[in-house]
Image (cartoon, rainbow, N blue to C red):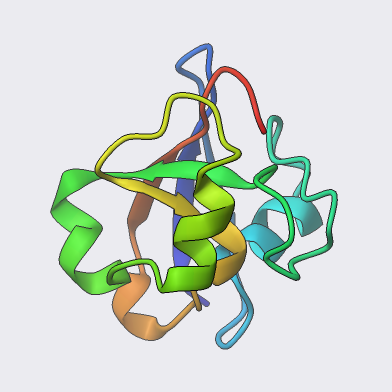
Length: 106
């Protein structure tokens, strides 16, 4: 299973294993990563699973689609590398992915 590292707002790293074809958000929830609230359960209907994708991984995680972009409007401190973790599918190519959880969720 691919490993994903979440850097929480205090700078602490939480490395978890995530199942192929799940989402980065699901990996966080199943492993109790702090700061990922996921209030809508992954339906892309809120912004409570907002993360910043490490610059080295932006090409592999891809661009947000229009619906995700609309939901990011509700997130705090949106940046060029902002994504909703519920919209990033886990693949073998994402083994080693690093994302940072913002100080506050939408």
